[in-house]
Length: 96
Image (cartoon, rainbow, N blue to C red):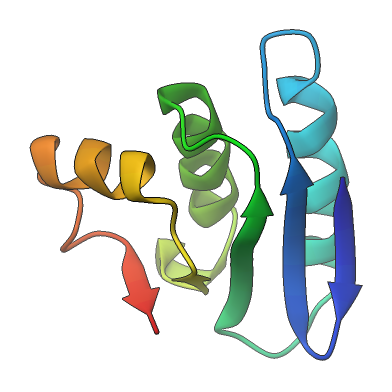
């Protein structure tokens, strides 16, 4: 589920093959409705930090100004391992 509260795009639930496109489109609508960037994406309620979930986040990032308009917060440990193994930590703005 995608919600927008307190200037954060909050992602919850589990992104899987059946719903990844819906997550992408719902998040994209929120991102495109914003005028102030960077936008914080809070992943604290994301159930699984899979490569598929990471792919959705990267697709969102590509739709922002200069592909740098998102900051990622509360990244799950599994996803952080994937990010580091893929050397994406310099491309993704991860905040505390």
